[in-house]
Every structure is written in C-alpha cells, then in structure tokens.
Length: 83
Image 1 (tube, one colour):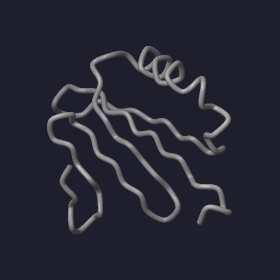
Image 2 (cartoon, helix red, strand yellow; image 1 turned 180 degrees about the vertical axis):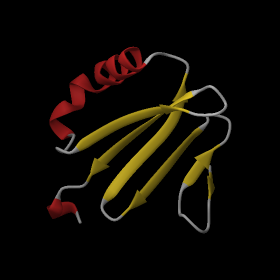
Image 3 (cartoon, helix red, strand yellow; image 1 turned 45 degrees about the vertical axis):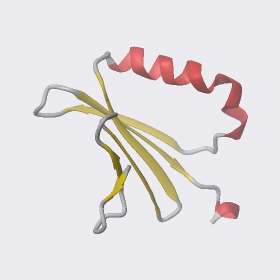
C-alpha cells in the first residue's frame, strides 16, 4: 500500500481500494462490479459473526464513477472511549 502524503489515505493499486483513518473515523473505499444490494448483502454476510464488535454509526454509500465502476465507501466512527 502507498500513502498519500497530503491526505494520509493509503491506496492499494492492485486491489483498487483505499483506507483512511482520521478524526476518529475509518473509511474504506473500493470498486465492485456488482449491484448495490448484492454487494451490501455480501458485506453483511462477511460480518455476521462480528456484528457485536462493530460500533454504531456505520455509513455505506456508493456511486458510479466515470470509469464505469461502482465505488463503495464504508465508514465507521470510533466510539468516544476509543478516541
């Protein structure tokens, strides 16, 4: 992974994803060639066994970019005690 020195975001070019931790929030952005419902469903299935560890305030958004790929952003705000 390569870090952008200006934004602090880490990029993984081969996997087409980025990760950023700032201001008590962690966000992951990645591209997927599936529909929104399919992607969110698969993400939920992958976290079912860990749901109790995920803090409230999970935000999932998506958008289609000029390259035709749908990009998803998952952000988790850290609990106040963790800050």
